[in-house]
Length: 211
Image (cartoon, rainbow, N blue to C red; front, side, top):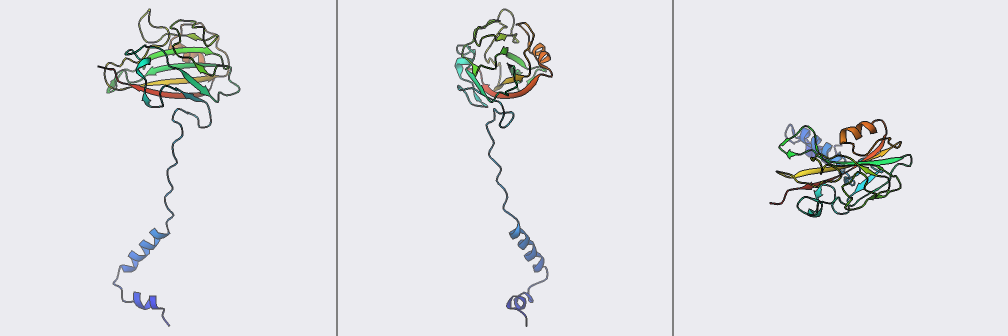
């Protein structure tokens, strides 16, 4: 004896079975998984070294105080989860959007080079003097930014001529102490760090010049 369902479907138009089968497959398909929420964007290695700027969040505007429109002092930066094997830290800040985000130069404009930072330091204080040997953190030295002498040592804040620029603060944990002098530029520092980078963390701030 045919079931009531078989009796009813016997009179359905041709092609209806294909539609029913397709719908049935869709109904059996598991619900799409939700995309996991992104972790803190300043962490280049999830669970690894972290870099943060209490004055601004990742991909958020840098406060006026730390730019040429304000006091032009370096921001407070903090870090955590530095590898236990690290012997020294270094930090570079540069702007890949200079001079115009629509037509950037080949090499990013460098705003800050500071290295030989002791691993005992938990961060960089605000307003580090623009000197080769700033005194804090103890033992840290600074290098050349992209400015012209005599204002090319230490931090120089955002001063974008056009558009919204991004400023990449990159922290490096090194496997050994660098045997170098103060005053290195970005290229020379990267060369000295080659093969010694254990971990890296990144924080990006943005700025549009006040008019």
